[in-house]
Length: 63
Image 1 (tube, rainbow, N blue to C red):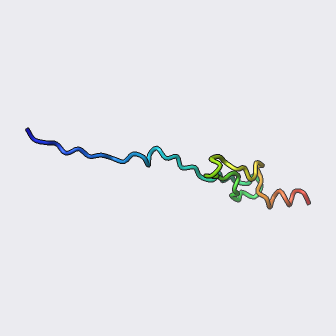
Image 2: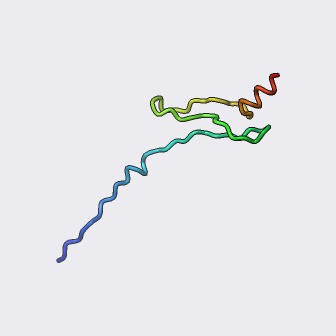
Image 3: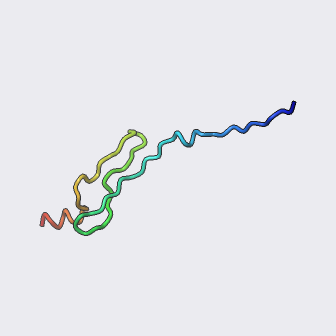
């Protein structure tokens, strides 16, 4: 009887959830802007801009 070698795989990387920043596109100028970012310490998203417009277009609309 021969002994078989078995391979052990480290699947811990597959269980790690990688969360990215949420980037939206401005409806007016079509530039990308940061809407949310993931905070590792708090373990949730921090919302920066919940509108459909970037900060520049928001400032222009208020003038």
